[in-house]
Amino acid sequence: MSPKKHIEIPHCPWQPTEKQQQFVDNDALEVFFGGAAGGGKSVALLMAALQHVKQPGYAALIIRKDFPRLALPGGLIPRSHEWLAEEAKWNQARRQWTFPTAGDQPATLTFGYLARPLDKFRYASSEFQYIAFDELTDFTEDDYLFLFSRLRRSTRLDVPLRMRSASNPGGPGHAWVKERFIGGEPSNWDEPTQQFEKHGRIYIPSRIADNLHLNEEEYRQTLLHLPAVERERLMNGDWSVQEQGLFRADSLRYYVEQPRSDEQPGQMELLDPKNRILATIPEGSCYRFVTIDPAGTSAERTREARGAARSWTVMQVWDQPQRELSRFLILRHQVRKQLGFDQLCDLILELHREWEPERIWIEGEKLGWAAYDTLRFKVSIDCVPTTVADKSTRSGPLQLKLGKGEVFLPKYETTWRPGFEAELLAWTGNNREVADQIDAAAYAAIVVRERSGGVIRVM
Ligand SMILES: Nc1ncnc2c1ncn2[C@@H]1O[C@H](COP(=O)(O)OP(=O)(O)OP(=O)(O)O)[C@@H](O)[C@H]1O
Ligand SMILES: [Mg+2]
Image (cartoon, rainbow, N blue to C red; front, side, top):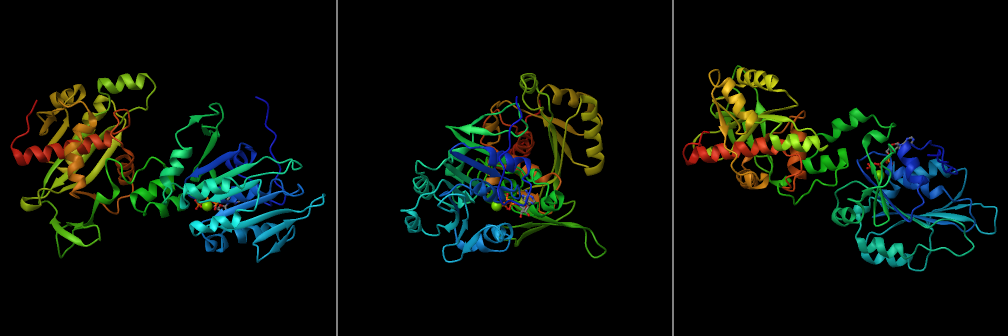
């Protein structure tokens, strides 16, 4: 492949990141730069706007939902002043830069907003060759399509027509933006800067790691404390996380651990959705059990051989409170690892020493039976029957429990909990999706259901 010639960006004092350059270089009609917060998307819209400002008559428009967001410190208007104060002329009333050109007409870059549905008609008589929406999910598709109709060029002007947009996932327009751009075919397999195409529209995914100018670690730490759906969208640019998926974010519950002190034994405070204490559970008063979904069932191995992602062994430690609170399930700990059989057995023993569960439940498939045979004289272990092969049916009791707000996760845990939530919230119930953490949790819901209704059938 011949090396691509990068497009120069007039008046831009910054060196574009690799992704920004990819975005700027693309001259397809419609390109969307979407994904994680801080990937350099907004800046890329400004860079691309400047591309043709040497062309007489070129007109560019950058749009946000409301004016303050353009004008705030760090917004695109102040940024444009840093870049352009010496290069172009600013008209405050029109919020417009005018660039001198070699021809008879100047070029312009205008900043606009569409706070209300009628605002769009202010642009009805204008024409632009570049229109960029920042935070596209703040808009309706109607606004977007209306402005699309303002994308025009007189025959004398030698510039491409470009509709550009950038956005994090989430926001009122999440669904239409996802439908319009996400889920297309990869259009350049062989390049590290992968992009996707759907009906001719290009989607360039943005990641935090793309922007070397951010302190990524610090930024990730800040995002870890956001609610689950928002966090996955902002941190990982995940468009699949759904507010209305099989598992809903608003039904997740949390608890806070109060460690043991001289005055009191350790305890867990279960919180309601408003963070009020719903119940206080003394440490050691629960039925504690472990559920295990071992990697490497025969079906998984077949899928791996066909190139699917390798599966993981998941072990979860659960506490079920006593009596009237026994409908609650508290997830205390999770281990997720890729393990061989011997390591699996070692880890079960280690977890058993550390957490002292009353019983360990392992998936009743080949590997589970083998672990059961090896360990049954050392620890209290049984197999969970997996007569129902279909994952979403098997997770029925878990869906019910989660839906009723009866499953509690540790509020301040940031090593395994975010990954567990991400899997829950992205899951649509499709058998092909990775769902090993969901499987282990589904077993926990089966265990407590059967416990309250009698004994679990032991294989
Ligand atoms: N090419 C660059 N050179 C130097 N700094 C950059 C560059 N691109 C981005 N930055 C810095 O990174 C910050 C984040 O960029 P930007 O605001 O474009 O990200 P974003 O993806 O739009 O983020 P958000 O999702 O929060 O809107 C900018 O404020 C700027 O300081
Ligand atoms: Mg931005």
